Image 1 (cartoon, rainbow, N blue to C red):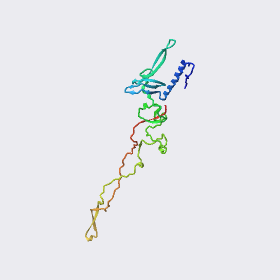
Image 2: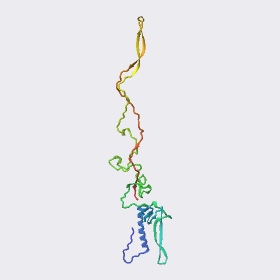
Image 3: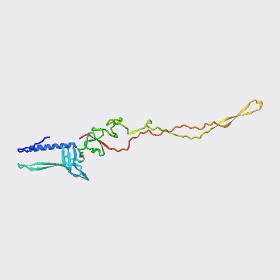
Image 4: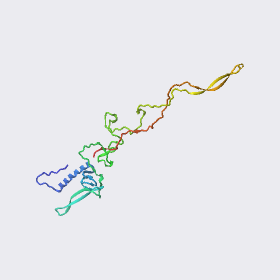
Length: 274
């Protein structure tokens, strides 16, 4: 950084050129505003009800005093020039004062575009990950939603699991796995049996119709017998007590089941630098 040595004897030549160099030197300090974002709230600008307090903002390369008031959707830069008389009798612009306030006009900007700067003393580091519950459109500058863009991991539709080099599924940061829904296989079901019963009557017999054979002798001289048949009820031998096998109707639809614990959706954001 340039410097000027004022601590000299013999009458320092404080001329306009020296003062111009001084002004150029402190203008360089405004570059620090880029660290926090092109449109940022550096200090103050506290919202209380429908009003915003005074503060300091950074607006596209320029640090500006912000004069608060009743909140509006737009802000503008107000420039005021103060004139002073010169030794030659002319009056010229000397002081040029600029500040921002609510209002509309040339060069206006949306107040919603100005984000509060994070403290530079916080322990931020590249690829730091945090959970975020605000609006996606208001993610702080330098942070990005972890959707696989802007150099972030894609964590959409996934639960985070701590890295563990001793477990194959978790031994690499960024490794993915698991299923949202699962259809159980036979091997995954607990060992089990099904039972059923049929009606039983113990030992029993069955009746049926059979042919009864009878003979009737004729006269001895006939030397033969005629056979006459008639119906008679008989029984079978007992089968004893016994059981019957049966088939049980199949149940279930084979549909996949929910494989997740109760959840709440949060934004995961990753810091990529400013």
